[in-house]
Image (cartoon, rainbow, N blue to C red; front, side):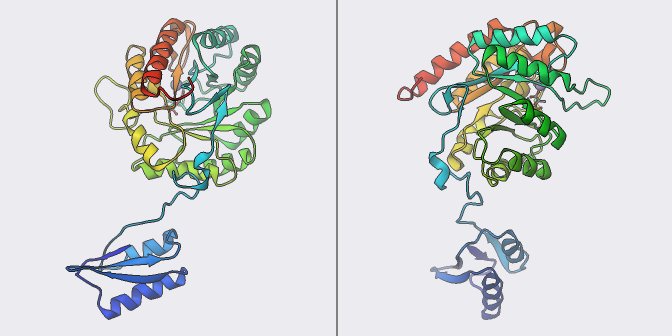
Length: 347
Ligand code: PEP
Ligand code: MN
């Protein structure tokens, strides 16, 4: 829908607009109002170049898109009945819990194995473990290929599907060939379109699940859903959206907790939302409340960092990881709240 700056286009302006949309297979239908005429674009109006050219006209006020930019992830798309199943849970039917360490310490494999058993005991359905880490400081521990074996061994022992972040195509290949079931795209890479495309291609037609974090730099909700669309476009719609806090920060919290965007996402997309309260607030003591808030806002699941002995951890674990006891209590409370809020669902 084109809104002119004046009450209506001149004949010359209408001709120019009509010529542009015609190039993209569309026509213009004026809708004459008492005060102002607006112009409907009839046809597939999703071509970015067409919109950019129309927006570039000095006499155009703005373009309101009627059609969704998301062919696959839109709530009204044919995929809207698609359900993602992982770790024995159908997302949306039961509260889905991912838990485990921020970072696997390759020098201390036993700690991760113990964490894995403990988070399973606490109620986790999927095991997270950072193999390669996106560290702000180049001198901080960057991860180690050896940790991939530790992650897979823990997954084998517990029977939990493994979740690891990949930051480039080499890691992607290593993770997939090791059997990582859930690929995490981190907050720093959620806008890396080359990587999103590579992951989309690599998981096409597989049952791999992609946990897409919300970028620290993402603005409108549509940017988040578009990133998910990149992956689905290659043939794997198993994309979970993961708000994890964004900028600007609040004094005291690591990021600005953004679990409150969950209902907004759910208005636009069918994709499940799994909130990461750990990175949102960045301190173990604040994590349980943020986890419960996420459930209250309608999240389908939680991704929580937990460590058998946080003070022995590396990466974020000493400050952010919940002990298995606190994790277990948080999961129990979150599940109770979930049941209260969604009495007709399965759990
Ligand atoms: C993580 O999950 O440990 C992590 C680095 O997350 P994010 O990309 O959200 O910062
Ligand atoms: Mn972390």
